[in-house]
Length: 145
Image (tube, helix red, strand yellow):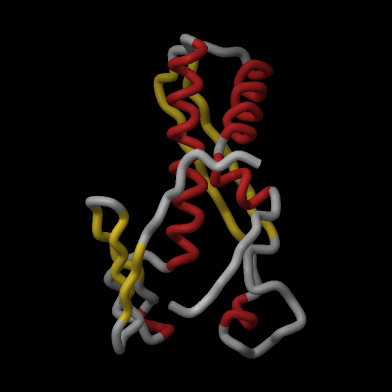
């Protein structure tokens, strides 16, 4: 295992559900819907998570298309995640808290046959770090500062 880059973020949350995050030069917000006690000032963590899957796949698609000299007009992703929200609400503990299934659908507008589009999609999924993190286990530690 070789690590040659570390990506780091920091977050802050006070009395409400609102979480502010400092990601490099960017500040982002995470909140919860009003129905679950938030103020809906930003997407939920789960929405950001699925967005990061689609965003990373899109970025890798552009990189791969440039490398392979593929004319990629556009690529659209729809990512659906299914989970049992009773676990995160503390009402159930016999199941996983995370997504039990994630479905990724791609619409690729490029000068490729359907077979070539499928091969391209397979390659970008293989090369995408976020896709890899949800496909394979990563060593995760947690501690107090």
